[in-house]
Length: 160
Image 1: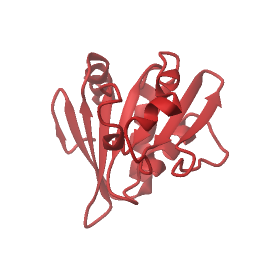
Image 2 (image 1 turned 30 degrees about the vertical axis):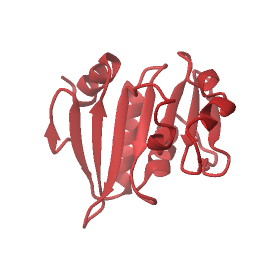
Image 3 (image 1 turned 180 degrees about the horizontal axis):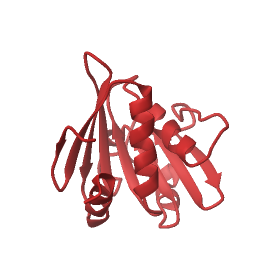
Image 4 (image 1 turned 60 degrees about the vertical axis):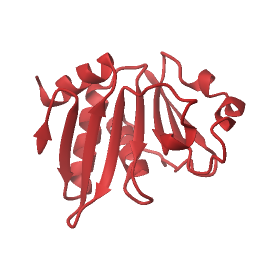
């Protein structure tokens, strides 16, 4: 249940990893193919953990690696292809063109992008922007919608 809520924003307290798994599973249930999600937060805030928990909800049982050194990891599921990007090591946003970012961000995939600010000016507007923040006890997730699709996802996340 969100701590605070509006049409375009939700704040969730995540006291433990089980709470993160629950939010990620809820996002999995309501995130349509073609969605783009930005993940923000300090090093170790739980961005890759969120993607791992999302993939667990999707039925992935194998390892979920951080794409810190590869820049992108691909997960092919029966009804979904998911791309998980980590742009932390990007030196220049134009490197996204060399990576072929447009080939990945297709309407038949879902993409999660960590450190999107490193690709500023070369990335489309996300449907959702999820920021994970440290708290004295656990973490806090701030989820914001930036598109019509994002607002529809937000409605579905809280059942409104």
